[in-house]
Image (cartoon, rainbow, N blue to C red):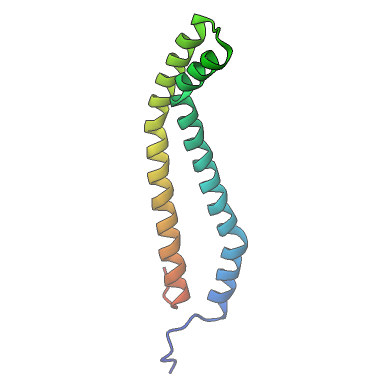
Length: 109
């Protein structure tokens, strides 16, 4: 009968819905993950900003350096969670893309 393995009308409608709903959610996911990584980099590099403040102003409170060292430790601990979140985001995106390709080829779940 139908030897063609291309997607049917229902699959095309599903892919259109995917383009409207899922793709913006994937973009939002990667925007959040990128912001999380930027925050971790800023936390880890906080002693450099304190040293730059001291070099430019010539005066700095010693407590600033201690706080920046504590924040660096928090950033290092948060980096473990960020790496795990990136791995989960990669897996989620890869599964979504394989599902999209299987629907596009006309295969069911």
